[in-house]
Image (cartoon, rainbow, N blue to C red; front, side, top):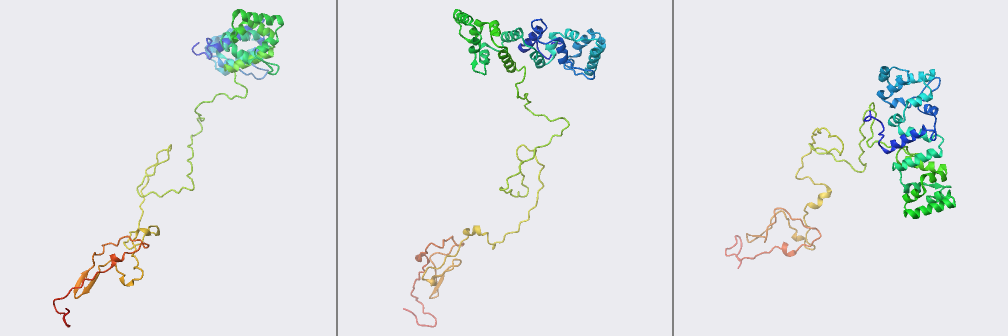
Length: 383
């Protein structure tokens, strides 16, 4: 049963709540009555009831309690579900078979602290009429369990709208003699630390001389610090990974639309388009055939590529007679002899800039005159 208990009684916070519940059932610590315990954890009227207690108790714990009240057999109580137990207790309370005193006696402090949420027990105790004895028990127990230390306690003390803090709050309620004794005690122990200051004054003097509202505010801050209750306006912690209800189908997140300014090129035939990261692998694309018209040798490329084509250079200025064709050789007939130009034209015309001047020596045709030894047919020989 201890392994399955909701709260571990060996931990500090459950020990603190257990001490408060045990002290509540004493004459000095009776801040809430047994009637208030019944009204808080099993509120009911003539028509309906609300179970804030038995639903947290397992069958092996609540079964003997129900059987001890004499309202249900032990075997039936051990196998009854939550609804059945709630109905049985409600009928017994309505019939007067169980009263508030028997209700509190049947539920021991260990049972309540072990199985009921500790925040509910704290709220129940905090809502009572807190006396000096109850506040003293709460502060001293929490201090002994190390739920707070002396430095934190002095920092949490605020009085008169925050104008007084720490030791000023404590000394404000002391008389001159009590303040002198406090200083003498600090001098004797030679301990001026926060722990030494609290020990020199003592919890009896602190609780007696400090207003209740100041001390209760410290208790409220303490239970918030240890996580016994949630701070006002603070949401409970959420799971790191959000979960959807089981009946809601999971939907894939929409893919982000591509920017309008970035056109998507058409993939070539057989090309595989990579899927964006995070998406499942797309099915293999269906190859598409793209018909391309055959290029002809005489087709002119687009205007952007015109600079890669060679142009025939214009003739030199002032000498139209030397306009030569760069595609053919240059032949000159003199006395039936063929004189070839110094260098033949290249098979393909070189790329010549139109703006560069043409060297006349490169294009000048040199004629070599020879003296023929044979007479020319049809005319006198030249000597």
